[in-house]
Length: 118
Image 1 (cartoon, rainbow, N blue to C red):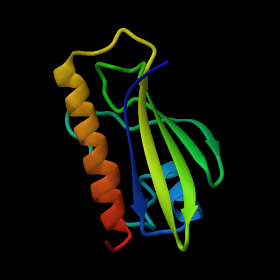
Image 2: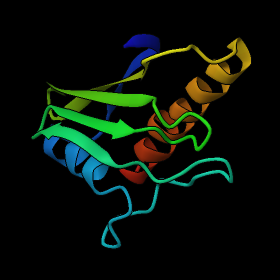
Image 3: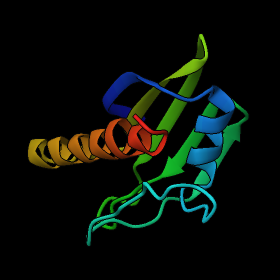
């Protein structure tokens, strides 16, 4: 797999809570944070190891082979969450890579983070 992008940021929730949010992004008992665009699809869980790892299928209908890996680490009472966007190839255009990286930042480092009250 070829890495198309990666970013680590803190999340104001412990690892088990972050892991659960990624495993069940549409949990009706939690604040809704996974707001997809018209060209995006709900991810499937391809792999997980509580509370440290989640792997999603692609969010993009035109790039279904992509994978999104989430690595979660304890950081005091909070977590550090790294998303990594992977492709088996061929690589998308530079513009498409920029769009996918931007969307992951919005969803994970924006909407998910705010769902915890930050």
